[in-house]
Image 1 (cartoon, one colour):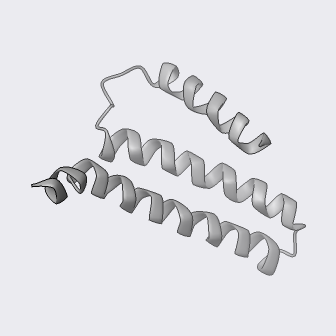
Image 2 (tube, rainbow, N blue to C red; image 1 turned 90 degrees about the horizontal axis):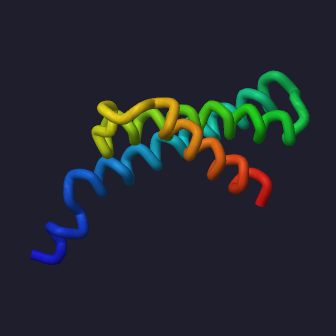
Image 3 (cartoon, rainbow, N blue to C red; image 1 turned 90 degrees about the vertical axis):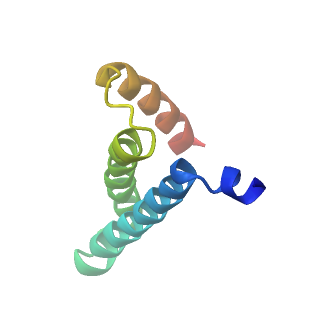
Length: 88
């Protein structure tokens, strides 16, 4: 079943984690800009930091169940990609 292979457990959880990450990102931007009257660049940066931290740990724990790997090794690779992504 092609649909079953595409929308397996891992992919479904990955989509869910991505959706929650988006909501966290938008919530922190809204809080920073609308509630705390911060510059939008500060809001985006703070929101990005919180969202990607959640994204990393949620995917590590729930999506890929990769908690048996060294956290420091995974974190370094993730942070390098995040920095590149943020700069682009």
